[in-house]
Figure 1 (cartoon, rainbow, N blue to C red):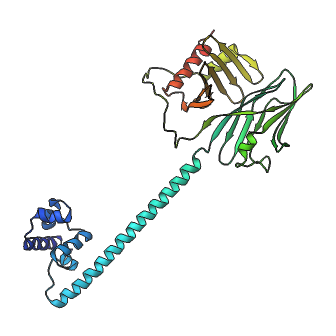
Figure 2 (figure 1 turned 120 degrees about the vertical axis):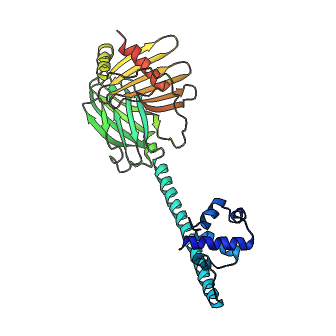
Figure 3 (figure 1 turned 90 degrees about the horizontal axis):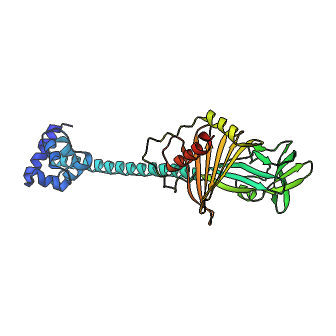
Length: 361
């Protein structure tokens, strides 16, 4: 296309109608500068604009594209037919483009919806505890995903020498054994789903509510119903609140893990695979555990209204935190951050570690 010829033709048509550049720009809903650029040959109007210009000036699109009027009636008919075909093609192209954009957005949102909602609440972590007359279960963990789950019971506390531990569940009062470990006070099932054909993700919750340990020693055989308490769930799609950030950036949260473990072994009481330490005063109670096998430090703090739980993974230096209201047993706060972050629950955790472990004699 000859932009200069088209521009001169548009100017000629505009002046014939007695329109100023502002008048024409107003009819086309564009700026006056655009009209000026056309008429100076700097740019040419788009196809959709040409169609509107043809309607305003009572000419064909072909005449605007060639920059001159058809000289004869026959030429007029030919250019009119060509213009109608071009307009039809332009409308079809716009329709196809619009449909394509809609399809792309539908596919995109379908994919994103599937991705987020298939991941939503796909990971859950439960702490496991329980006790009978002669045996106590502490610091067990159940981790579940959409496809699998693993269960770890690292410490069965007893004064007796344990002969065997059997993990089982009850289904309509019928016992179904899952796993047995001989001569050990711990169990680790790396693929909980799959040990029994009746255990699948759909009925996992029901099985959890009916899960037991049978513990045998030289003197006793006792069954413990395991208690599960959820301590983490990836529900970020609806959980928009973030932990309070403390502006004081001068606090140093760095912990030397070797020094920490040395202090724990020196000060804490050892019980099988755990080191334990308890602090009680008038306003609060603190219990600290270190598990050797999974290299985790647990801090449980209680006051009159709330229970506070910190789990520190020494391997990646992440801290999992949960605050529970005692009366309602409802989780008030639940966060997970790296030790380097200046969130309040990280600082509270560090202060407890510093006061009762690192700086203690």
